Image (cartoon, rainbow, N blue to C red):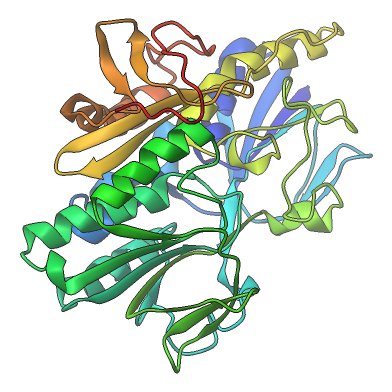
Length: 418
């Protein structure tokens, strides 16, 4: 009996385990899925928790609810992978030998990487993260009684999960404080290591204009060095200081510790793979999906959906002894919640930056690219239903996997979409 092993039962791990269990002959293969805990988090929902728009029930479900019976599910942390021997050692004492393995263990935040962020006494008092359920929930409790001041959102370094989420938090803050009649008491600041609001010029121009319209100050090229909780100030390596009353941090994002221990990762513990095939260039029977790999595209749930067909087909070809021929094009789609029941959608790949237009169909859309609409807002909210009831259940989502220029308008970087 051969073993198809999946490490991590988040979005990518659950989806690939389910898909491969349906593709492989159960008389020849067993599918094993390993994760450290029982809870499955809908991470895009963390954005809505601080503003009371989602509850715990919206973002947390038991993992076993979405894992087919024919998949063996093991709860344990992972001690080490021994890729040359094709085996994995678990903290529960088990050793699993595998024939094919997918690493899908995502990323975690590491606030300890920034001097003063954790050890100065401000953590979860007036310094909060929102990339964890605990952080987002704690921020929500704090905001209920917060009476205003400087609300600073800082991205420590890239890459991060869902690169647009910090912008969304600010856009929703603008809406939420306006709704409470205290927007004039709040100064919103975005401190980012990027030269602007986003990595690509056209989208950066469009999103930067939105920030300006909403009176959100951008401190660009800001690389944080230290946090002084006594003075409530963050300082950059080039000695720029930003005072805060409330600091929302997006700490350094890193892959799983076992990746480092196993000598399989880069400096941030991301697993290097071919960006087109998702296969390890060093170990042919290892693949990495979702947030765990080092490919140059957004670490977001939709990207996993777009990756899935490529990875499944390549693994099946490899098992059959054929050259892998399917290529992932870096397709990413991100809804950006912009407040006041509106949202923005961006759609791009490795080669093409986000452009204005309509998606997925020209003219009719129904979604508008790089423009604020109510339909985009409802698309963002609908993704939760698609996630729990389709993606994790193995039901095909009616979105094209491959990036397409259909419906998109060509613009130069100096032109906005207004």
